[in-house]
Structure formats: C-alpha cells, structure tokens
Image (cartoon, one colour):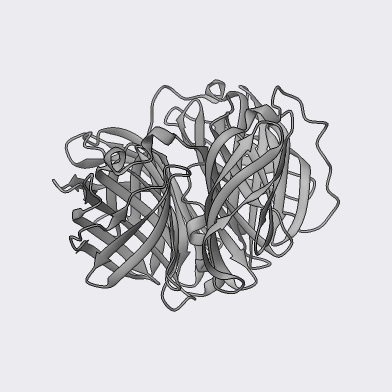
Length: 489
C-alpha cells in the first residue's frame, strides 16, 4: 500500500471526524458573520489534544496539554511530537500561546514551542470538548481537544482494563498500520495481561498476547496528566506517552522512532452486545484510500441480522446498500470477533465505554473505527438544532489529505446551513459557507444520498444516525472520507 493513502488511516479514529468539503476550482463564498453565545471564556481550564495527519515528511502526530485562561491566553502546556520528516521525536516540549473563540464556537490558536509555532483552528462542541485541525500551509491534520479531569491523574484512577485504538505508519515508515487491543493494569502500573490485534500494510496479526510487565505504566504527572506506558508483545516493545482525559480515557502517541502510532484508550465494557449499532471505519485497501459505514443489527445472542447494511468507498469504487449478516462473540478477556457474509469480512472487536472499537483483520485491508449503540427513533425531525463536526479524508484527484472543522444549524426538515474552516493539502480557507441536505430512514441510515455543498464542490454522503445528537457518515464519490457531526451544547 502506498504511503499517501495509508496516512489517511488514523486521522479519522477520533470520535467526531466529519466529511470533507474540498475545492476543485471556482470561487469560495464566505459564510455570514458568526452568531451564537461562545466567547474566549468557553475555553478555560486544562485540556488535552491529539492531531494526526501529513506534512512534508509524511505521517506525523502531536499530543499534548494546554492551560487556557478564559481570556485568550495559553499560559502553559506540554506536548509530544513524532514527525520523522521534520523535527523528529520530541517529548515534554513546553507550550504557550494565544487563542480566540468566535460566537459560533469556531476559533483559532497559535501554540508556541521551542521548534516553532503550531497554528490550529478548532470548533467547540461545549466547554469540555472540541475538534481541532492543523492550520498551516506545510501540514494538514485533525483530531480533538478535551477538558481534563485532574482528579484522574493517578494510576489508581486508571487501574483496570483499558482498550487502545491506535494507527499510523509501520516500522518502515511508509506503510499503514493499525492496532486495537486491551491491557490490564494495576494501581502500581504493572501490566498483568492483555491481547492485541494489528494489521500492518494488509497483513493482520490476530489475538496476540501482551507480555506481562512490571512498572510498564508510569504515573501521570499531577500537573498535566502526562505519563508513559510500554506495551510488549512477541513483536517487541511499543513506547507511548499518554495524557489523561479522565478515568475512562487516555490519549496516546508513540515515542519510538518507528512505528508511529497514535490514538486513544478507553475503559473496557462488559455490557453484552445487543441491539443496533451505527459504525464507520477507514484506512487503506490495496494501495488506495478506503472507508465504510453502515448499520449492524444484532439479536443479543451472537447473531448479526440480515437487516444490517454497509456502504463502501474503496478508492472511488463505490458499493452501497450491501447486505450484511453473520455472527459475533466476545471472550472473557474482552476481545471479540465479528464475522460477516460467510467470512468475507472479519473484524476484531473490543467493547468500551466509548463504543465498540473495530479493526479489520482481513488481508489487504487496513481499517479501524468505532461502532456506537443506536438509541431513539429516526427521521429528518431527529436532527434539529446547532451541530459541530470535523473532517479528514483523501482527495483522489490530487492524492492529498484534507481536514476541516465546521459549525451548522439543522432545521429538522433535511436542510443544513453553516460555516467551515478547511485545510486542503495546505491550502487554507476559513469561514466557507456550507449548506447541505439529509434524509434519514427509520433505521438511521440515509434513505437517499445526502449532499454537503460549498461554492467549490458538491459532495454525496451516506448518513448513519447514532441518536438525535450524533450522526456518522461516509463520502460516496471521488474523494474518500468518513465523519460525524454532534449537537453543540
């Protein structure tokens, strides 16, 4: 698989990635002046962020922590960056800077470090959560920003079963790799057991034991929530820095020279799988960008019902409305297997408090994502009010990554209008006017393709509603992207 498509893999694992609105020419129309009740005061406190994407050297990731004062200043912070083509691996780097929050929740920040200034745009879902993109000409990346709970900055808070979902590039530095697994850690930082599934450039290694190790997790710093963890398997040791969001989530970035993986770990869940789930996964398939989404209906007894459906965009080859059926099971150690359509589709699954973490374990496909339990009934009236989203994907025409954050209003009748900030392979545009349509059937999936539109381009998408406040989707035209939007609070 080529690097340019494999690098798309991880940027969409975060919880609120959304589809692209990219330009192939033509003029851009700007949205009206932002309206709403957000100010600089809505970004106040200690936050952790993670972004991944591409720069001149290939895949890179940045994870860190900032202290925002509610008046537009970042008074302190720390970050770790793994960017082999530029600054390499740097850990515990100090951060300061400034930021602004517009009335609609969109904003911008300049993060000052010893190796230069990192410019980002963001959009706030609430005072506690937001989405973020790199907003420089020399790189594009996306991720999220979340307020930290300092009372969870201890090994005692983190002890138990944690499921990680990380991705990026492998030891060769060129090929896509993704890994999902579970570790059991105690209040002294000892890993007593675990299991991991990895797909490296289309070659899966399934159900691999994690080697027990004393002191593998180093306690987070009480000032910023940063700690370290080493995960060991027969393939070797992977070293990560992590930042605590809360007792049920940490943010991870690998600090080895290679591979370069980044993502999140969530508290494992023992709740039985039952009911219906909306999902998206993304990555690479046989040297091209890949994305899929759909609805999985389960009977609670290990069966995937034939009312399930999937849509796939593999490098511009699109198959929609593909029927799914099969089986699933979860072992006592928290790892499960999802087998669909007579074994033609296979996923490792790990239930967590933040949804079921998915990794495709078929040959020639490196793709990961999350399935979320659906709730409520669905129609166009379900989606009504103010929403925010973020985007990552691959433009197949220009073979480049794009990332975006946006804010819009949905009218409950299938129409949306708002604004978007876009980094299209290093070409930056803030405040693009956004409009679009949606049409939900009773299972939460689009009854017909929706449209997201700027002056530059119309995009065709399929939506998958989780509930009335969160909707996932994929693009089904000549760009490959996945995403979601969530109701703004």
